[in-house]
Image (tube, rainbow, N blue to C red):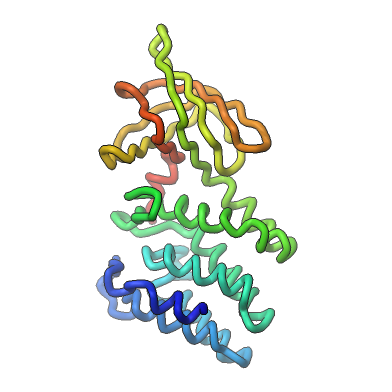
Length: 239
């Protein structure tokens, strides 16, 4: 099943942000296959080293590559279904690095099923949150990864209303933990695909379910239902 998931990715369509052939995304696919079927500690370690040194992350530079987005989904499958505990542990560690490392300039965004030009760290964080049950069951290291992912918040606007003072009040769904305000956010709208506008979240109130009420400033025009807000700092994050 996991090998099928690796083969289903069009690795050749992913960019290599460096001039080095060793960073080609196809090498990530090969290393993932080797990690999946590894049976000895040496085989597992060799596959992990290949991922850490080519196309997925660069450990000594704390750098993450675009191929980490599809690779993260596969690594999370390995955390859940890996054949051996050491494979699960390695996969979890690799996902943590992918979330925490910084991408190269010009390669800090990815297209996802729910939006284009999403900050890479936010896209990876959402994959992690989608496996919360698995990671909570994994123990302290899984919980730590979830806590880090929760810092990469996402607000999906359900409805918004402009106020006489020029501010905007919006009802939204929050993914991640409530964050300190004021904070800058970048706006993603499905209709235009626009990711350039920056607004300010002046205040945020959210309950345990993620239902949130936010006060916004510097909104350009009308904020449409379905717009998504990401932390502007994530959009600026580059190596």
